[in-house]
Image (cartoon, rainbow, N blue to C red; front, side):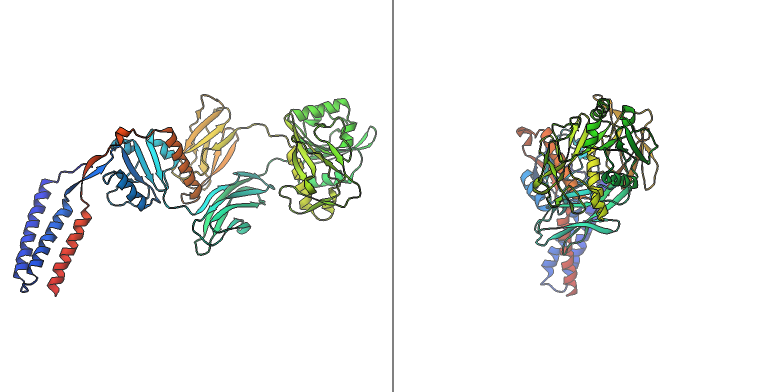
Length: 604
């Protein structure tokens, strides 16, 4: 630490003032009538003036320190860790405070990490105490070795995961962990949406993992709330932003060999759900009956590539697939393998026809007749579903289970065929669920089958935020996967404010990848526009929310930086001597004691 030379005018002026003060105090002490306290008063007068002088110009002391290492204090650091580290490195080791960390004695504030290289060019290692630094700021340390000394154990939400976007009608799943070391009482985690609790779970003492789920009721940008309730502790609430989207409903073509109430009920359900749906029923050989809802009427006599191009999913019974001509079968198989069509086959207690897609993998096994209805299960089923099970599918590693029966019977499964998906179900007469009032079960069942059969969406321009927890005043890297646009995209806060035009940087290795840097000013929802008509929404979290996952990311960033940099050599870590003044607070305290004694002795 450099030693400043005092101003000569201030130095000699204060020296003259101290000499006059000590002379006056000694005269007053000598003139006191109480001679017993005369000597003590003289010593107190000398001590008071000396302490006043030393508070302004403290003497120097020699401390051991390692010039190649320094200490940086961040919020949440432990004073005990600081004392131990200073005893290890030497009392003269430089101590800096960053952000809102409480500065101890002899610590200097640090406005920017870039100033470390300017003021300490010989620095090779930095000890960071507390919660650490954001990953974006750690990059400013370049090749400097970093070691993190965490503070007190964190309490609250340590991790949390949920999808940034969810389709309307799908189940939103949220999971994570809560840490509460040393807490003997249990805690509750509650998910709030639309002003009321939707799901909750009780955690044991000390915390643990949790899983919550909720089915959103409306589309748009929603900000739910995750609450942690602990006895005797303040309520902890964290935002859960989710974008609820309404994807375009796929057009469904229903094919049945005979008039069936199963297909008629399915057509009515899809029509009420606003699906574009067409139904073709074979009345007799060469004669078909058609019905269209939310679609213009067209000829369905023959399945041609032009006709299949208008639909995303085909639902057919096994008899219809077996009666198709060679040209129709070829058109159906070509659309499936090209990823333009998905097929759902409703099988009976008999082997699939040879024209069925992936017939070798979907092996239908008959079951004993006259068996009572059995329970069916699938993910997120809203209630119990029961049905007679005349057949089952043979388990196969290539199949993905969709509907499961008792004793893990496989009742519906999907398989990828080329770029598309084929689904086979052996569950009969599901319309009974709708007639019995179990409409939610019926809708969930068919949503499970149709979702598994819908072909994957074509690749489009997509945005991706480089950070899971964007913060105000912190740089955020935005990634674009698309051809380099001719017009630069813009980003703006939905709460209000000007739109900022982003400067894109194209990746030299993959031209379809581009990145941009954005510094958000406020928390809340932000919207990006471009390229073309692409709109992407993302959420910027307030600085005081979701600190647990943020601290974990900081620790991971420090560990990665420590692996990439090398520690200083043994020759560079030798201790040196640093000259610095004694703390002025000690001498000021001596001045208060001496002045207090003089005042008290005069009053007695």
